Image 1: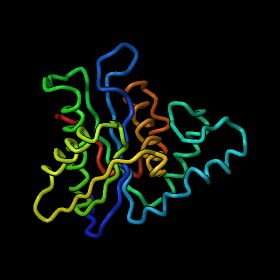
Image 2: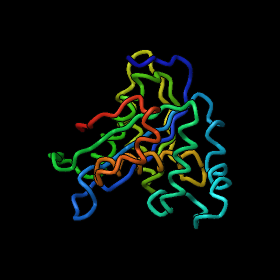
Image 3: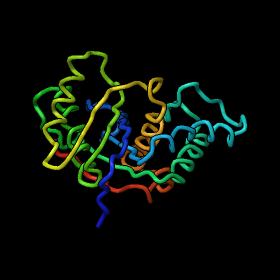
Image 4: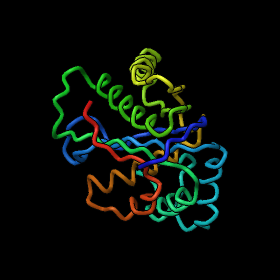
Length: 206
């Protein structure tokens, strides 16, 4: 049984994959949240990984696991694994998708369900979501959907930011990518690096 954390925690949420059913995009859409008691603990992860890589790999100014050398992604995941963070993972099986209310509503529901899973362990949570949509209206809709999963005794603050505004989102991207490899490409080598941090790994129902 997982220990419920009573103090305020900070989460950073991103996803890997696409919601649409398209060839060669995988059957699973992955959402991951990296959650920590002190966000400063995550602030130097990418910098430390760059130093350890020692110029062996070509690296982008903004880390995006799908675009980076896999050797560098491995180093980033190893640095994440050293932290006192927890991971909440949500898995959406696109093969079983019977959702008929549109992509934006589906995305909002999946994010809300993942947040609900996080609140089971971290009942007081300040959550930063990757700014997937530029439209303030859609972002407001997502936040409203998430507010509906906040139960009695829970606290949830939600903000939408880019990786430039919040570099910890790069770590959520790395984790989501690692889990994506496990489910879509049958490669759990990256997943195993951060497996010990995973507090919940649930199939999402929307």
